[in-house]
Length: 197
View: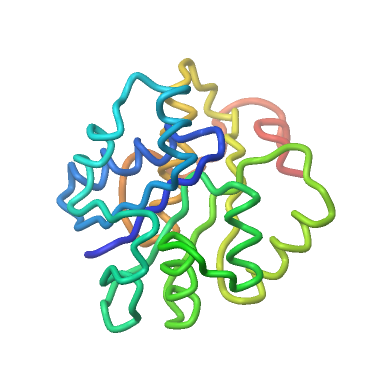
């Protein structure tokens, strides 16, 4: 399996880092693109260096290298995730404005009808953001807001990160144990476990 992983400058780079760790552990070929802003967010939000994050991928590509092989539809992949996806990146995907490799790779995924998962990170959302989400959804992408659930009662931040990373990988067709399927509670009133009514 071969996947493209983009990490934009939105808050929540831990989601992308965790996805890379899992994919490396199960020997999935990954092609990583870090935006310039992502490099800064990694420094601000984590204890990882840029090099450590890049080393989690099979290949790391330069953000502005539009001559990279992943900029071409002839380089076959099984899908792409932008995790997290900033509203700037979302807007670029929605408008087809591919002025860097991250946006170009996303555009390739859409035009080749490959899976594209955009893990949106912003709150609250403006009308522009909502309309951009609608546009990319109509084009074939899946918008996955980084909204963890709490019906499993996570005890740590790491468990919350795992759930979002697991949902993302599940949408790309990668089986993991990060996001286990929901099972109805054995006790308690119906319809109260997770607000499922």
